[in-house]
Image 1 (cartoon, one colour):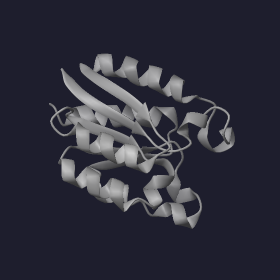
Image 2: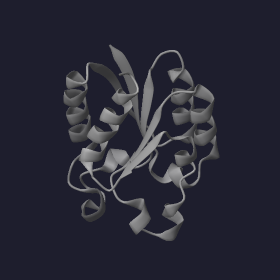
Image 3: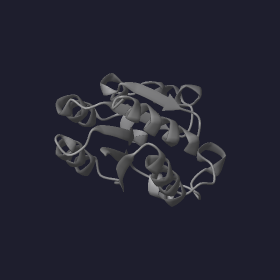
Image 4: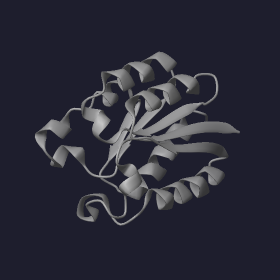
Length: 144
C-alpha cells in the first residue's frame, strides 16, 4: 500500500467559515473525510495534516522522505512566499501535487506566482474539494 502525505497550509483550518464565496462551504474535516474515502479506492494510505507555521510544514516535508511515496500540498498563502517550502520539496525527491481550492490565476496578481509550483509534478486549482481528490489520483498515478 502506498502512502501519501497531504499537507495543508495556513488558515485552511478556517475553511467553511472563511470567505465561503472563494473557498466554498466545505470544512477541512469534510475535505479530509473525502480524501480518506478516495484513498481506499486508490489502495493508498494518507496522513492528513494542517499547520499555520511554515517551519512545521518544512519539517513534515523533510520527514516524508523514506516514509511516504508522494506529497499532496495546499500551501495556501505560503505558495507565494515560501522558498523554504519549495526547497524542502525539491530536497525530498518525491512526486508533489500542488492543490488550491480556488483558481489562483483568477485572483490577485500576487497570487499568480507560486514558488511551490517550481517543485511540483503538477498543479490543480479552482475545483474546490474535488481538487484534492484529483490530486490524490494524480499522486497515485506515479505508483502504477
